[in-house]
Image 1 (tube, rainbow, N blue to C red):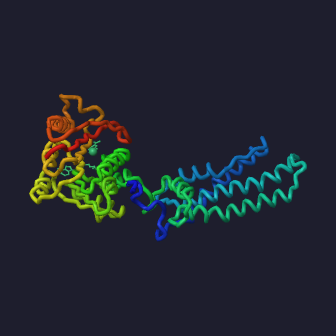
Image 2: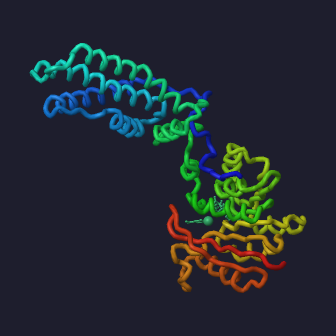
Image 3: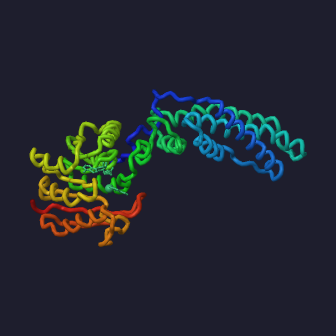
Length: 364
Ligand code: SAH
Ligand code: DHB
Ligand code: MG
């Protein structure tokens, strides 16, 4: 069974063929600075209270935070800073603290040279292995370990590497699209509904960057098809690139134009019936879209419509918001419609409180 995960649209790690600056002057300076500060703190704590702290996690966090602010920083550069800072911090603490403990007369009954040797060896091996090991985690290698992938995802936080995982929400924002795509939990709900009726043909009205499109297309079985309608050519271009990256171009078709033109075209061409229809375009026309799509379904089809709650806005009968008024007309038409059985259900997610109308077609 396919588990639809549009957030895996992009390669999860840095592809092998992407070359990025790894050893940079600012990285070296930052790594050295963190090392000096951590070493000084560790010496102070070690000599004062006999305890030192592990520098690797705070070093990683500081390196990510500081480099994240720098222009054009990348995960491999970050990796070097983290490695330098954590290994360097630990190693130099050992180098200073062992002699320090002797100098202040706290060293009794320990074999000094063996201890120093073990610490030095551990530190050197740590430095030698840490950088390549971390690199192997963040580069697209065939490491089979899920821990490695999980660690890579953490190391990658804040990185803006081309080809690295980026949540579609950020892709949309970076592409200059409004952040009005369905939330991840709504996307998954769409995918589960599509799979539970074994939908083989899907129609979507309102593509934007193709986020809901990808959730739905991934829910299709082999040979299934999705047709999506979009008015804005820029949105269409970005959406096409997104499902190309997701490897879904074969099963998705986009028709450009206002849905008030393209829906009658589909009816005239005898397209359909569709097993599932997702209405998510301009709100004032939602009731008109419902009327049109009822010509493109069969008994058992699902018609799902987004934005029917709008943070409770839909209960305001005299709202001045034309989107609210449009969706009120839609829900009233749906309630009147004898050919469907319908429910409005609320959704809460990263975009707040809204809802889906889910209509099951009983007759056509
Ligand atoms: N379903 C998408 C979000 C769609 S946003 C997702 O969840 O990922 C609404 C989209 O409808 C926008 O891209 C907008 O350009 C498009 N749209 C607006 N008016 C339209 C119309 N008359 N015909 C077709 N698409 C329209
Ligand atoms: C908004 C949200 C949507 O899901 C949508 O389709 C249109 C607009 C919004 O939050 O404005
Ligand atoms: Mg919507």
